[in-house]
Length: 542
Image 1 (cartoon, rainbow, N blue to C red):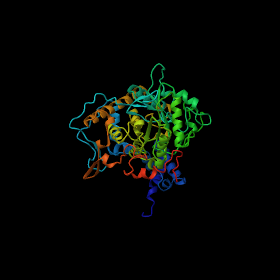
Image 2 (cartoon, rainbow, N blue to C red; image 1 turned 45 degrees about the vertical axis):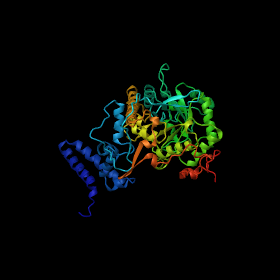
Image 3 (cartoon, rainbow, N blue to C red; image 1 turned 30 degrees about the vertical axis):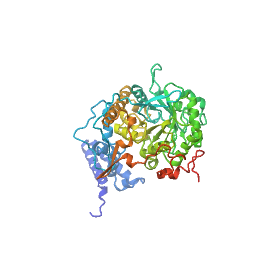
Image 4 (cartoon, rainbow, N blue to C red; image 1 turned 90 degrees about the horizontal axis):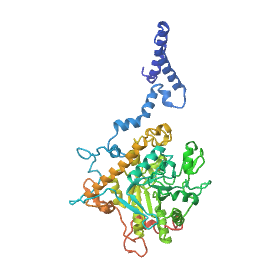
């Protein structure tokens, strides 16, 4: 018995039951269901031993199928039965629940105290005041492109870039209608402006759009894939389009580019992007309209002119510091400045990305935002350029923290997906999204009822800003723009806490310019890379 292959008992047992039940069925003319069942199991076991692709099945016929079955539902078992409420990645159950509650207008309060370990390193909080302020409205807004012909008054919390094609038609409709109800902006993503971004009735206003221009120039491209000024102007001058955003890179997969397989390029996607139906839709890893910092700024200035003076800027995930420094030097050299810059943190999400890119490419939001803010301050350009930030922002404290670090407004993608009903099944790339959000399957997206979800999108935005108003009032402030690094406290060890302003380096105005005080020591990243950055090339000076 010691040498008997016990792992074959399931197959032997199934064979024994099959033979026995067959004899009984022939004699008694009954029990054929057992014959069929045991026969099928026996056939499966024999097939397992014969096949050559899976060693586990050859060694454990029949039994190994249970292992594969449990493995297939492992994410659901973990999410619904085993997951820690505070486990942070990608988003904790507590974070998701808060969004669901605010989107549904349900109670978002919590009894019995915090579930967080307040003595764990990196725990953060905002200091409150003995004399809290009185905040009248939670409709916090900033003006972007104040000196332009068509400045835009933006909410400080908005929908981040998600394209039609990555999201379903109903998801896009619900997001845009929610943005229209809540008076905040909806970034189109690089998939351009589809008919689902527009109101179904032309007499009704649509949600404010930020038109993102990616390296594929979708919606403004020639048949060969280069930029078309004529097609751009036709879309950019639409009243619904409030700002123009050139996408240099995104946090989840910077420097990678992408491809939508031809099988997924429907007539609607082809129409929105200006590409042939049924053919692979390529997003190159870099732009063809510019190749230096100076030509990037000239391109931005061209887009601003073609749009009729609408605020125009760019979005990027920070990589090589000297590349961004080169862009800033180009601003100083040409006098051309973008109206805004959106910083996408490396923790940002996407429908699909190589694991190595998701995990190990792109600077996280804190360091990226700090670099951009400091560079503009050091070059005396910060007051001319508004900064947006995105990367795992869903709560009012996320907004507080990001604005305190240097941003003017925040964008959220996955937060608004949760408001639509996303359950974090992480099946965005399979076209089998269980809630109809990240799919082009008509039957699956039919489950997403647009009027209901649009209301939830607007509710989530409004209730998050109400919570933000309560936070800044407790800190003694009247507007989120007053938030500074010294309002945040971070635990650095079990026995030590520090103000964030003391932990993170901040430059003085003009510190990077030659006429600034040379005795003031620069942080290492600026001391090393600012001198070798150049406006004429993204490459460093050797």
